Amino acid sequence: MTKNYNNNGSATFNMTYRLNSKHKFDLNDVFTTFNRKTKDPLAKKETESESNSEKTRKSLKNIMGLSYLYTMNQNFNVSAFGKYYWTKHRYMKDTRNSSIWGYGTALTYSLFDLQLKGSYERTHRLPSANELFGDGALEWANFDLKPEKGDNFNIGLSGSRTFDSKHTVYFDVNYNYRYITDYIQRNIYGEGARASVENYGKVLSTGVNAEVRYSYSDLLSVGGNITLQNVKNNEKYKQGSDKVPSTTYKLRMPNVPYWFGNADAGVFIRNFGLKGNDLYIGYNLHYLHEFYYDWSTYGEKKDKDMVPSQFSHDVNILYAFMQKHFNISAELNNFTNTKLYDNYYIQKPGRNFMVKLRYVY
Image (cartoon, rainbow, N blue to C red; front, side, top):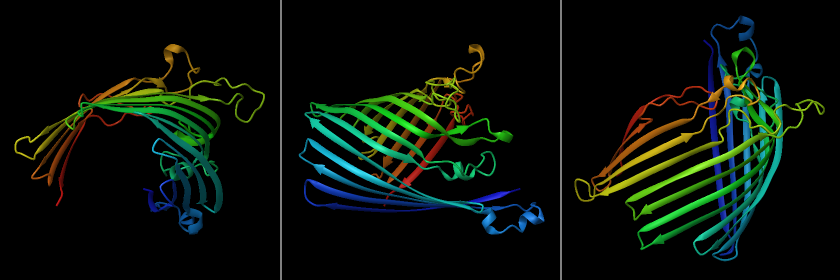
């Protein structure tokens, strides 16, 4: 009968200063707070007499970023930025403060209908409240969890071309390289049937994602995207040892999909029913290729646990009428009622239907 009361708060500040047409500065600050209060009416008397400090789960985070953009001309611009991460966490009687810096640069170059993009960032992923404190039920706390650190490189090419003022073709292709240390990994074999999270040495992630889209005026849009990624263990030796070779070195990390994509199509029917009324009909396809539930070297080939490949289909309809003041939309997700699973082979909800009514004055 234990009840956990989670309280979340956030505040955001943004400021932009443009010196002239070539120089611009942006300042951004995001502050978040979390605290959890626990009540257990069946707790022992001595537990109930514990001080508030012994029950405390608090987290404060502040991320401040400053960026500078230099626009040489309409074809070329470059930016540089820095981020300051500050955290303060309290768990029971233990309090910890930390501060780290991130930084990076990005540039774009346009030529005719093409744009070349490139960027580098030294980035950090701060642990979430559930990762630090658990969820009070099925997730263990790990107050020793460190922020995930990564060196990210990205390069991409995109283009758009319109023919006869009605037909538009767009594409976008990106390659990314990410070297990660203190990778935050969920451990599904936690003690006492509970999962936990832990830092996992070194991980190397490389991948490609691409998108293609065609549109006809404002009446038809068809497109799709695909992602191929390799997130591999880059720890040559077992954790805690510099002599024992790791049997999973250079293997894909478990519970991480490596091939997935989406496709969609939508059509607008103008003046449907009455003049000024619009009807939109859309379709979405989602695909996820099978991937390992555990390390690929564990167990015999016929007995290896796999999260299976998954196809799902959605349809949605939107009708706007009365000069667009009224909107009625309906969504039917996974209408074939396919069995879908998350990264840990937990089945997701099946077919579902939603209706939304909207009035704009």
